[in-house]
Image 1: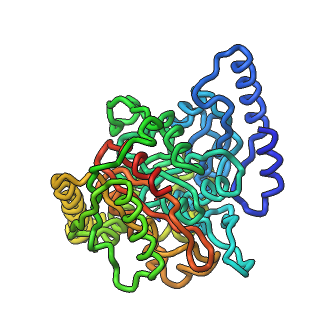
Image 2: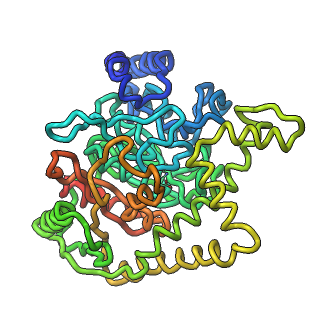
Length: 453
Ligand code: GLN
C-alpha cells in the first residue's frame, strides 16, 4: 500500500485518481497484515485496488466526477466494494471517470481528462485512456493499483481496457449487484474489474459477483471459481465471427488483429465459423436512445434538495434550474435533453418504443447464433487505437459515440464481454480483441481469453 501511495503521488499529472485515501489504505493494509500473521488470509488479502468514483464508499467522497455531487459523502458502501473489502482488499482511492460515466475518453469529467501512460512512438502528445472508466484503465496501466473497479453501460470497461493494454470484463447483466453504484442507464449498467491480466480479472470478478437482494435485477446464481476456467481446453469450441462487424473503412491493422485472434483460437483447437448478427447496424443508434432516456430519468434525483450542490433561486423551480445548469457538464445536459425528448408524449413511440423493439431483435440475433452451437463470438474491441486528448468529438458528439460500435450491442443484449490485449498498432499503441459469451458463461470467456492473451 505504501509503495502504491508513493507511486500515486508521483503520477498525479495523469489525473487518474480524483481522491487518494491513504488513511483507509494504511488501516486496511494493517488489518491485512494482522490477518496474515494469524494465518487467516482471505482471497484478496492485501490486494491494493482503486475504485471508480461511481461506487459509493462509506464516509469517502463519491462524485461520479460531477460537480453536482462534489461534496457527496455516502453513508453506505456499494455491495461490490463491500465484497472486495470483505475479501481482504485494500482501497487506495477513488478513480476519475467521465461525468456520470457518459463518455468514451474520460474527457467529460468535472475533474478534467485523464492521461493514458501510453504514447505514440516518436510523439509526446497526451492520449486518452478511454472512457468512461479512464481513471481505472490508466491507473492499472501505470501500475498505480493492482486492479480497479469499473462500470460498463455501453463499453466503459472494455474500451478503456483495450486503449491501455489491460484486461476488462463486463459480466452478464445481473452478475454483479448495482446497489450503491451511481445509476446511469439502469437496464444496461454492470460492474466489473479492470486489471493487468485475465487471471487477475477472474480473481477480482469472483469477489465482485454474486446475488444481492438489494438489487432486484441481480441474478440468484452461484458464482463459479473463474480462475479455475483459466487453462481449460478450448478444443472443439465454436467461435463465431460476425460478418456485420467487418465495417467498411475499418483500419487494416484492426482487421489483421482480428484474423490473428481467430488463428490463435484455431491453433488451440477451436472451430471458427462465420455468423450473422443482422441487426448490428441499429445497435448504436438504439443505444443512444435507450441510454439517454434512462439517464434523464435517473438524473432527475439531482435536484439540489437531496444531494450535493444547491444553487439558490427565488423559488424552487429556479433553484432546480440553477442547480442543474451549474452542476451538470455539457455532455450530461445533452443526454438529459435527448432522453427527455425521446420519452416525451409526442415522440415516445417514434423513438423510445422503436429502440426497445430493436433491442429485442439484437438480443434475438445473439440467441440465434448461440442456438447454432456457438460458444462465444470474437470481434475487435474498438475501431481504432487510443486517440489524443482533445482530438475527437469537439464539434460532433457522434464522432465520439462511434467508438462504442463494437461494445454497445453486448449491453443491449445483457451478455458478458471481455476485452483482451492482442497486439499493437502501427504507432505502437495497444489494441484489444473482444470475446462475447453466452449469458452467465463468463468462464468460457476466461478460458478463451487466456489463449489470446
Ligand atoms: N461511451 C458510452 C456512453 O457514453 C458508454 C459509457 C459507459 O459504458 N458507461 O454512453
